[in-house]
Image (cartoon, rainbow, N blue to C red):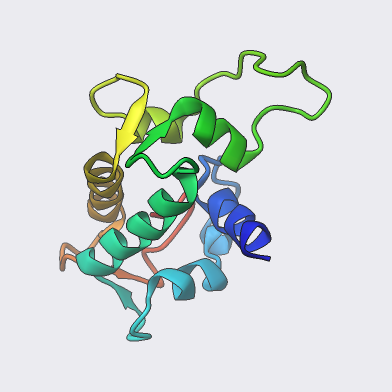
Length: 138
């Protein structure tokens, strides 16, 4: 059950093309991040959300997300592909891996979330409202 829920959460953070306009808003994603239900996502809520994702991605519990863990967590390798076949590195992983060492730390994951918050915060109040929340989200 947790893995199914995780898969849904992960899918919402994947880099996807914006198709159309405000239709990119997904209320369930927003509400999953807005834990205090004030209809605004704060920097602290972004950090908490990224920490939850990090714990799911860090499958071996070593405090780092290796690229192969990310591939497995996101189900990026087709089931018909040979084991350990090459999978192109998606933009989301590159964004999190700020130093390019193919290992993502919690600090890197949180920093990527804060960068997305700043990009989505159109009115400059330090928070993301439902109106500002569009794919790929935080």
